[in-house]
Image 1: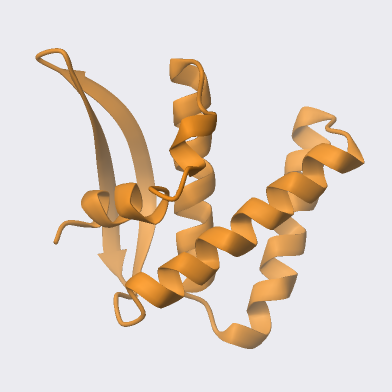
Image 2: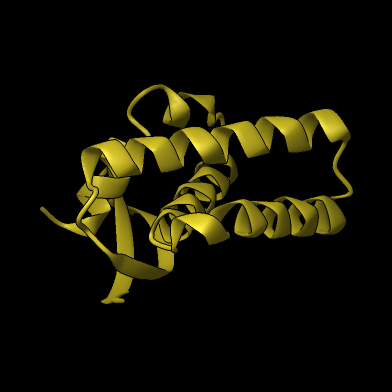
Length: 114
């Protein structure tokens, strides 16, 4: 299975349904890929990496505490799903994007083994 299909599966529990615009889809894809990368880190480092991600998100977007709490929860849920669905797949996602090809939406991922 391709990494792009794994990422789509990762968010198939309703995560993707939060997107209302193409920009929303791109943002959710970045969040899912970041969660994937955190899930591929050593377990003891995960909390710190989630904290760094959420704090940087808050700084860049000037987000509310509620938005950041929701983001943190979403990342944790995505990490749990990655651990459940793809526990042995350890690759670092380096880029991602949503593309539209012949009227169909697709996810394109670039990754490399850890």
